[in-house]
Image (cartoon, rainbow, N blue to C red; front, side):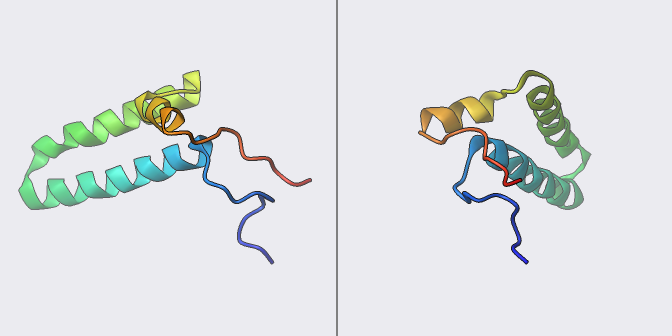
Length: 78
């Protein structure tokens, strides 16, 4: 059984934005634990951008990824 349901496993903006958000959330949790609660602003900023991406379909990170040449919308197999 394959790990991915996508035929094309190329990295796309739609797959990298949530992955980047997850990494940033783990980093912010580590910073809160190590340095103090002010790093919760980073957590809030990441959550706000992820919510905006879900609502509008773009965020600053997705615009940068598109400028770097990454495509959008991985196609699912049916």
